[in-house]
Length: 478
Image 1 (spheres, rainbow, N blue to C red):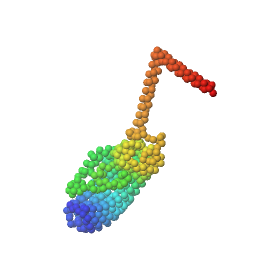
Image 2: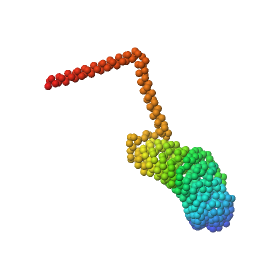
Image 3: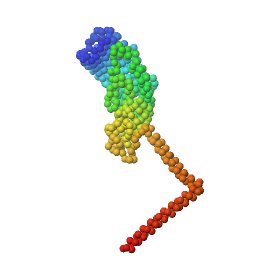
Image 4: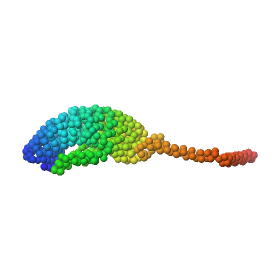
């Protein structure tokens, strides 16, 4: 193995490097200042398993000779200035597990022969200028765990990409952000039960969000994440572990970019395995937010902003107890903010701006810690803290104590009224019933009432007589 990463090497790679070290198995020259082209002679390294030339200034085309590398498992040419198209000569007898060609100047179509790489686990082609209609189907990538085609100019529709029903697919990250993908979101997408990150933002998607989104098993129950995903692929893929042990390579340094909490965040594998996210922002989606999304109790990030969604926010959204970032801004949502939202105790970013929401902002728990009023901007009928607009008495909402909300509050009020009515009935019939059934007590009671009545009349008569005498005496004196 040769590892000269982070050594500030200048200049081009030797064109005959493939003849200089024919038995080389690992070549790591990342994070240097190398320029020139990728040598074609690399194909002569018959035993080469790992090649990392990332973060340099390499230019020109990717040599087709790489298609002849039968034992190459790890290939990283990211963050260079490579141009031209990706070679379309891949074969099914190659051993690739990990291909990273992101952040270059690559153009042209998606190489159709790349679907022959049946052992490929992670493919990163993001942040290039690739274009054309995507005819790649996930069914052909039987081992694929991460597919990142974001920040390109791909067109087509999701139906052709998903390619039909399949329930045991291994895909965990599907990132198509910032392309020209159009059409509806197909129901077949829901069969990707192991999806952990779904990023379809900044496309031209139309139609409604499928209710079956509430069935992504990892997002419903993340305990599968620790017992299945981490051990099944991220940590125990035999060939990747073998390379790591043999060449002391840390695959955790390979990043993936996601927009979370309103800004781009970079995830390496250590943190990526724990992130659970759905981003459908900046499309042309319509309809209401499916109630079924509340079943995604382990979802961390939900971004549906910049669409044309209408209707109300799901009343039981507070059941999504692990949400850390929630963005529904720039839609046509109406109605009140559900009281249950106060129970999102892990929420650190919220944006509901520019909708048609009305009524008081719920108080209590986590919402009291989110003090930025801009997250409610563009909703003129909202009132309450942190807005300057105060709520009138008839619109004030009580402090929230339970996300079950209205149902439990109504039950408590009903029980209160029942207790009051029972107390009144007991007291009333305790007195009236006694007088009705006991004759002596009744006579005594009414006699006492008569005596009190006579006494009151006598007192009033004496007071009136005294007042008249005083009034007549004053007149005689005058």
